[in-house]
Amino acid sequence: MPYDPLRVFRKLARNNRLANFRLHQACLQLSQEAFVARRASFFPTLRATLNHIYIVDRFYIDALWGGTLGLAAFVEEEPFPAMQALQGAQTELDETLIAFVDGLDEDGLAAIVNIHRGTRIQQDRCDDILSHLFQHQTHHRGQAHAMLSGTAIKPPQLDEFIVGDDAKARKEEMDALGWTEDDLMFPAHRPA
Image (cartoon, rainbow, N blue to C red; front, side):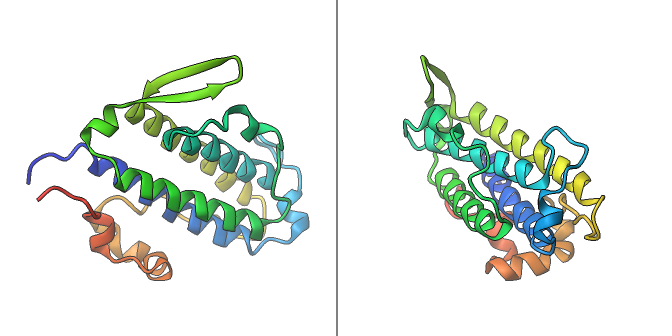
């Protein structure tokens, strides 16, 4: 099979969706008190950390689609006070990111993205923005994972979504999302 430079981004977009699904399922088991309790981390609460992931995802995903939301994405630091609403909004963004990545071709991957940053417009390649976004998500999910260790809820495994050998470990989440292994390993729009 020839190398497909888009495949890794399609897999990472799905990894993001699966990891958020698993993390959010754990966080939904928390009481509101535990969700907002102060903990040792860059952001002081699980609510603040997960809202930050949402806000930054919204900022970059809007730019990837050609939007001009820019810094307005950061006006409200915690737009979702409760986990259930945050989960719904994050799920919508995750699905939007998958749709974006699935619609890319090699030229789109190399295209310049305009990111509105108030008094300036940052310009970077789409593949670089995607790489940054996936790294940002992983970084802060790791912080949320560590904070969950200080609760009564066991932190979920968040890294069983890329390789085929992990199929058994992700089956429950795949079933819940209505995905098959073929959806994850060889997403739509793969080269013939």
